[in-house]
Length: 291
Length: 341
Image (cartoon, rainbow over all chains, first blue to last red; front, side):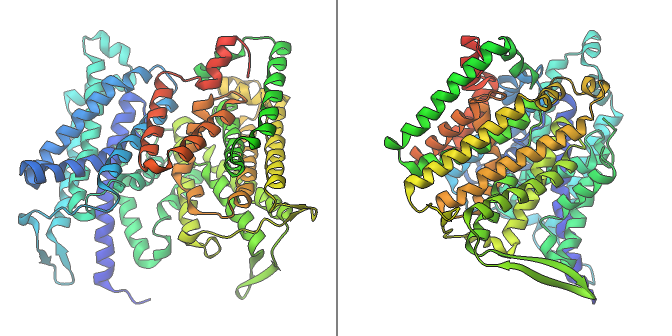
């Protein structure tokens, strides 16, 4: 089989881009699950909200992409905090499944409202002028914006990893995940930490949404299908480890890109097939601890 | 799930059987009279979904397993039955130096055979998916079933026999057992009602069997059940396969009712809808899923003109049920009257 290098590289790059979003989203899911014991089904809807807020900021407030990168996650994260305070906080004593059901309902409401208002065709969002154009790598061309997405999400992912694994705040967070009662006894406000953690996880999803806006266009349904793939990513990686979520996210994006080149019919399903293989051979996931 | 159900188990066995018998008699009576007042095709569709929800409830209500991908069995059985009744071509691959296909049958089948084979197909899918999903517990189980269903959704989109975006239509109704003309609306209604009642009674029988008692023990405390010597994984797998087969029965009858099979029935939103029906009616109640299914289908029917508002209202019902009415409608009634329903 003759390999068409530019085409292969193109698919690899798309894979890396998708992998960036898988990593950011599964990272947010893992952080939220660690603290709240809730699988946030609304994560896809919050990713979509991030893209929409970026669009609104540009249209109505004249704030460009760079402002949106900061402001949109703050706004959507704030909405997340409201959701946690008003709805999720009543579920912590119940079976985990209720959290999944409630956030699924939230996802339906959010997606329904946006579809009602904006239909299901996408709204355009321009690549910021500083990042238009392509770079000639000799054997292929690399669009600047896509390179930026990969680099920036790597920075955000490792920043999050550093914060959780290496700082004092992260140590509190990990301790509260293990034993909230004991951490409260040390005078740390655990309920507030839980609220802020949910806000942070949601903000990560919104950040991914802002970055996705110039690539996939702003669309009410953009979060619905990606969230199921991210669930599979999370099952493959196991939610026990932050680094696991990052590595699995990027890795599976690349595998998906390669499948698009070598066997395009399977590109939609390859991640699910990998999930099945991992479950049969290593039920706890690649980085997970056995239950 | 334990909290949702534990209060309901208070009454004694004898009185609970009595309340269930009376409720069952009322349900049969209502279903027999209703076609005189309500558009029968709507009722038949609702009955298919009611059986689907009952099959789903067997898992969530009695084993404590949340399958978020039950559309897989419902939708694929629907495709199987529609294909077998309309085209009837089955080919299997074999190896003879290279892969070859041999055609076993190539003519449209009678409804009863098409439905039977579709149910078998759903059972096989349920067995395979179940053996993968029971390797993980709780929240992971839900995510795995959802991911597997999404995988099969993409297969349905790409497989040649499903007709992709167009689906399979029109599906001929034909003659049941060569005697009953299903094209007659009244005969069709009786057929759907009988299938629903048989499926319903089968689930009822399973729940009250020794096997069902073990399932409930697994729901309440799986570790304890294991320590008592039960191979809980086997029980879970049998329950999952049975649930998939009954969901498949509901799905296999549906194309004869609506005369098409489409992607809607394998999509994740359908998996979400069956969760909603069961949650609204009452998780772990016998009659809850039936009432929940009728309520949701009626809502979709009468609010069809309002577009996205149906989805928004459904999301709202999810949120309300989880926060305020975790027992569901029937569960709240049963709790109020201190009976089991």
